[in-house]
Image (cartoon, rainbow, N blue to C red; front, side, top):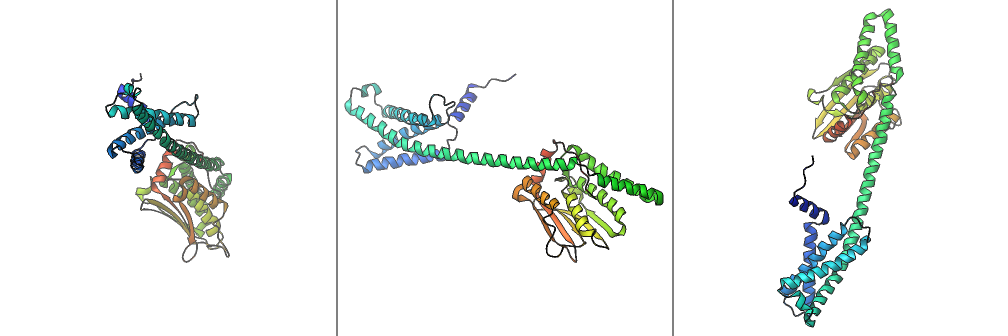
Length: 381
């Protein structure tokens, strides 16, 4: 059962809706304009005392301001267009303000119509208020249109970024939905071959495959992951490749315990590992070592994959490959300019690929991703 709003709450809601957008800054600007108008009238030779003119200008000016804001927030505008409502609000605000001036100064509104001088003063005050209020309304309308245009641009940009994020996430889901059969087929074929010649090795490879699937299966209904889960997936993946490549591949994965539950986008680490194996270690006869490290400092998370393989090819690098290009697109969509992917030479040889993301953003994307479904993927080996 819905609790009915109290009269005071309803009144506050009505005031907030009627004068939406009215700020102390705007009120201060109106006060300054009213004061300048008073000073201008004195310079023109008006005999009234300055304080008397100032009171009149402030009352009329603020009455027009309130009327203009009320008209700007009026819903719906079926009877009159926006500009007509603003013009009418200036006239009504000036008339109401002039009546308030008469009352504040202790004069009779009804008796004023029998006194030509008083009526002239009333008409002059109201007319001056309408003239100055019209200028203010024009400026107000121009600012409102500019603000609306800016808001539309921001909304369009937000929609564009949301669409880009959806496209990238859709691509990721498609990638994850296409469970690469070659990795599983090749691994199972190796297991089958080892059963005949080295049953203990076949058992170890099968254990690694089970470990890989155990790490990958939790991602089948999520598009987010954690550093610990990605590290377990990487360890199982590299263990399988190590058995297939023998002594040509060694690896080390260092994940501090306090970072294991830190959110991290799925498959990014696997992309770096696949790139390190395919372009770094595998082309070299003696192979090499892959080292995965993760550090957190100054509110940023840095994941690095270093290999001691071939290094950058002569005359260029693999920085613009399809996998890395897709990874950059994902980072840009998820984190904007707050994330980056860097490639640099390793010493004495090889490449260090690093992903750096803000911790706060990573946590927010992890929370959003936990509710989304996404099948897991296995990398191609």
